[in-house]
Length: 113
Figure 1 (cartoon, rainbow, N blue to C red):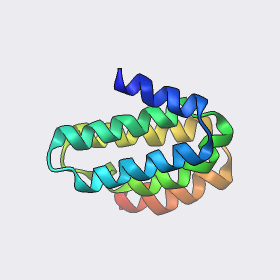
Figure 2 (spheres, rainbow, N blue to C red):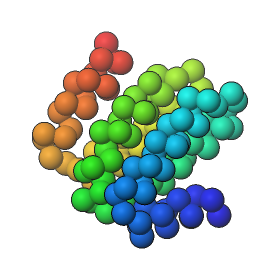
Figure 3 (cartoon, helix red, strand yellow):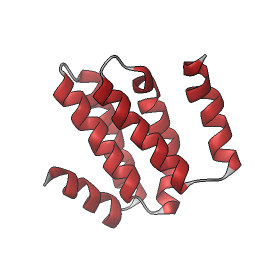
């Protein structure tokens, strides 16, 4: 039910509210003390990314990338999976070279090296 609510907020509310929600989730992610909290926030951010209209996605993508980049190489597999799902969603829905190349250079390729 909570994830459906997140999807509803993104689908129906404006950029200001979604931006503020992302800031709140970022704060909660930084304060998370156990796996369930961290995974829950990552799942919420995934649902936000997957339900955002294209125009909103363009706006929130840089913030999502900066929040979830460190989790691409997290110890817990579940965290890696959820953060990777967000990146995959962003890449599938925004195929512009100007979006994809900087993220690959700064996030993914650096971690692979």
